[in-house]
Length: 210
Image (tube, rainbow, N blue to C red; front, side):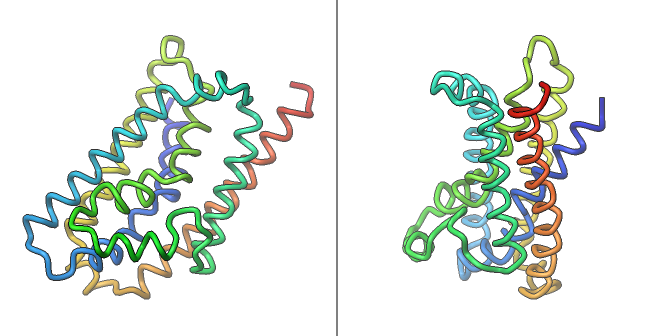
């Protein structure tokens, strides 16, 4: 009952990587008023939540409509998460979140909540792939408790992201950029192992006895 939601929480937390939002949010809102920071953080989380819920409820149906099997998406999702894990471990931009041009554009925008905060940093390709991988096999009518557990895990991660963005300035003074990078690399190692497991599961289900 609680094992699967907890596993999903760990995976989703590592993919969203709320700790990485601390230096990002601090840099994008440098010199802004506290009210602006609160508004941007709250709006970003609400928009990201709407995107994630939409994918959780309709993602599997969309894959079926496009003729894409869940096993195929599991393999691709695992590969995508693996690229994200490499980005986290080696502190390099792989393009799974945003490009340098997009980052430059975001600095010129007055409203940073939709881009780049909600997408691609919170509800980015990695997050959406994770949602589809875990919610895709579920049927709400048959497994309402598990469905609700996954939703609760999503809300908890988003709440953590919101709190960390609201406390970005004092947290940056405590942990600094180096501390955020160390945490990101440690989480990247965990995500890399989980990504490989997704690929192995997809291959096993495709070519195995099942």
